[in-house]
Amino acid sequence: MDDPDNFKTKEVSKLGVLEETLEPALYPELYGNLYHKVRINYYPPRGDNKESWDNIDISGWLNYPMQIKVNFLCRDSILAAPIVLDLALFLDLAKRANMSGIQEWLSFYLKSPQTLKGLHPIHDIFKQLNKLENTVRHIAGEELITNLGLDYE
Image (cartoon, rainbow, N blue to C red; front, side, top):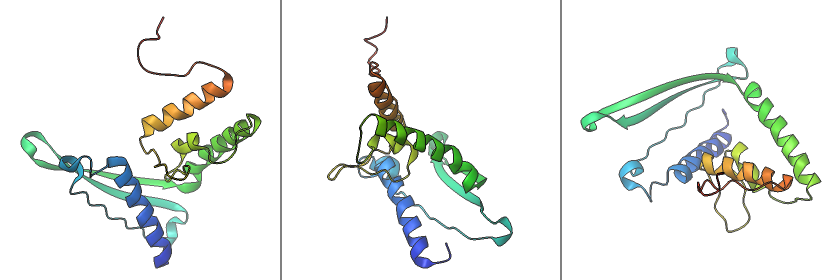
């Protein structure tokens, strides 16, 4: 991350996800003044360990300004291992189901999901999970989950 070009790519991708997820143009009262600062510093004694500090400004009772602070220490490889395993298993399932091309249903696992040309990625984690579950149900020949509340027995 010491290379300015690499850092700029990381900064742009993180900010893009927030803008796509929160949709400040659609919800200007909530997110119109969205400000996101990314700072990643390499600290050699930690090696691959990462530590992040996040400040989230919120409004409390009577619109009193408040802040939530999150400090997160992790290892990228420990975080990634189960995700990589899931993706390998799901891609094998897709191949066995004769699915090819962009696997949009795996967006749940990706910060910057790919879509077919002309489509916007879905960043809502609940919609992503529903799409993942429904795709697996479709492959298995099961009924899709609609959440309408009309199909309960």
